[in-house]
Length: 115
Length: 113
Image 1 (cartoon, rainbow over the protein chains, first blue to last red):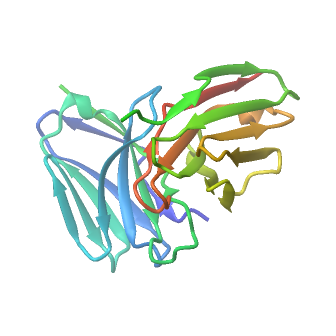
Image 2 (cartoon, each protein chain N blue to C red; image 1 turned 180 degrees about the horizontal axis):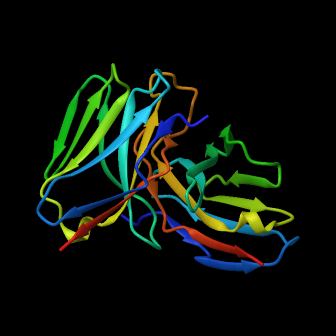
Image 3 (tube, rainbow over the protein chains, first blue to last red; image 1 turned 180 degrees about the vertical axis):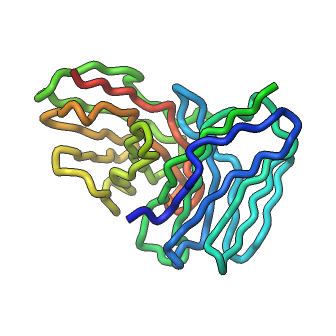
């Protein structure tokens, strides 16, 4: 049972435009969400996170939105740059639970930003 | 501060062999998690260690095992390798809890022939 779903395997965007990557989750116990970026032949790199007590978190060109009622989060990249081309993973955890001891990852979305 | 290091970076083995992968976490980090990444499957959780104790384990067969040493360095072992074990194996560390932000190493690419 996949608890974190990224339903778009790939996304193609023009340079300078907005990239929107989506993620849905099913486990209502999740209270902390993260986005990672991964280039080929490298490990994932932490990008941005959000706690369930917030509905938005911004860091430069990256903004994550959380809609708890819909169990949905999205990552917005504005403006998109060719260097943003990578696989983006959504991850979630149950921080308050304390006994889970893991992050649960989606399958990733390949973002391609065309010059 | 040095990042997470993994050795070796690449490995070729044949079916039936066993393999040991090593991970050194960021200095001060005591939680180490292991993931398997295969095309189309994302990052699948293998197990997590803290203070030499396994705290959580994913849905992998018993051929996959791990351990953590007193200096927080960790190893994972796969015995009786199968073709389907070919994957990128990633190690990640965090200060105490993997529910916090994890920092990943570059991975070990394993090819089983």
